[in-house]
Length: 86
Image (cartoon, rainbow, N blue to C red):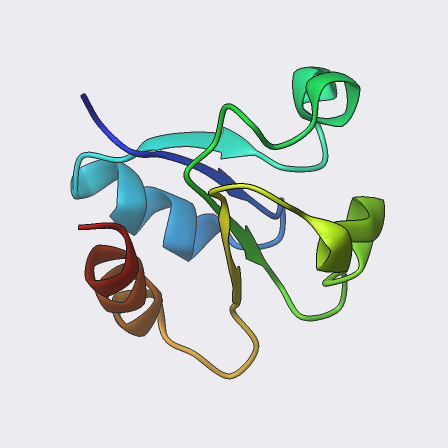
């Protein structure tokens, strides 16, 4: 089963690469289900750095990995997700 990752809307290159690598990718801001149900259904969240406090994410409890994409290339983010999730 592919890992589910919520990604900030402004990170299109990251979304494309994650999708190519087999991740199940959703838009963080535009997916109402995330804000209604929380992050329990997701393995990771990738934020742009500008919105790293979105939805109070510093208080996320559970299994979701939070990655701040500021200053990182898409390849670095994918490598970090692979290291932390697998």
